[in-house]
Image (cartoon, rainbow, N blue to C red; front, side, top):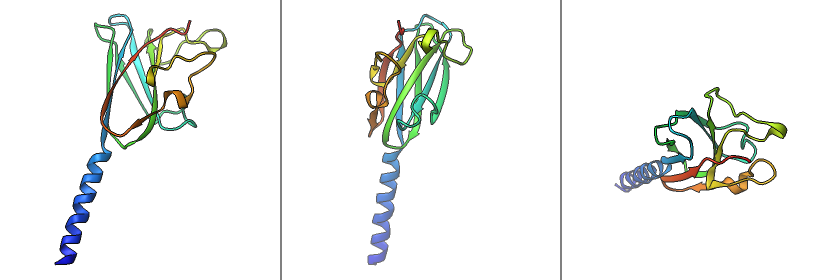
Length: 142
């Protein structure tokens, strides 16, 4: 009987733990022109891959209000950062100018506005411990 109770408690604990680990991150992006191109969302889980190799990437058309809404489900709890590129010409990449300065609008988690170079992971990092909605606004680099 004790073994049965122990197994039931372990099963409940595992079920509860596994449900808590499946979180949803919703990112609402604003600041684009109505129906103007697309938004490219990249999610990162460490400073080592930040802005280079996302663990997840999604692309959505900008809607009639100049917005895009990304919903990323089934994420484990942890630390993350994300970037969003407003791909105005829908060519799938960030258009840059002299010294790599973006010519298209961008957004980074925590609404980080970088000064003198790309944003730092530590500034953009957030801890996902529950399902959340984050709001970011696209900004020009100039």
